[in-house]
Every structure is written in structure tokens, then in C-alpha cells.
Image 1 (cartoon, rainbow, N blue to C red):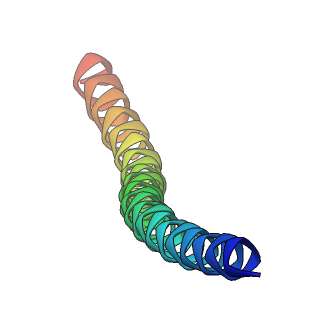
Image 2 (cartoon, one colour):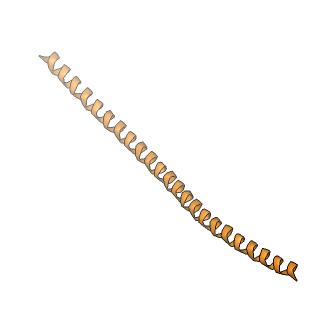
Length: 85
């Protein structure tokens, strides 16, 4: 009988230790996953910001190209007027 009680106590202690160890590992894993998710979120935000800036630059470039075309046409018109005189 004494052997059975000792075995049960031993098994109970082992179970408690396993549960505590498992809980600790789960907490570490959860913390690591949260950290990685936060870092990934930061990277995605940075990427999205770069994409937004790129679209903004493309719009500005398009406007500047159009302004250059208009300026070139004006110059051509002025040069044409000079050659006529």
C-alpha cells in the first residue's frame, strides 16, 4: 500500500511539474509570436507608407511631365513666331 501511495505522489508531482513547464513554454511561445507579429505589422506599415509615397511621386511626376509638355509647346510657338519675323 505504501508503494502505491509513493507512486501516486510521484506521479502527481511529475504531472504538476510537466504542467508548469508546459505553461511556461506556452507563455514564451506566445510572447515570441506576439513580438514577431508586431514586427511584421511594422514592416507592413512601412511598406504601405512607401507604396503611398510612390503613388504620390508618380502623380507629381505626371503633373510635371504635362507642365514640361506645355512649356515646350510654348517655346516652340515662340520660336515659330521668331522665325516668321
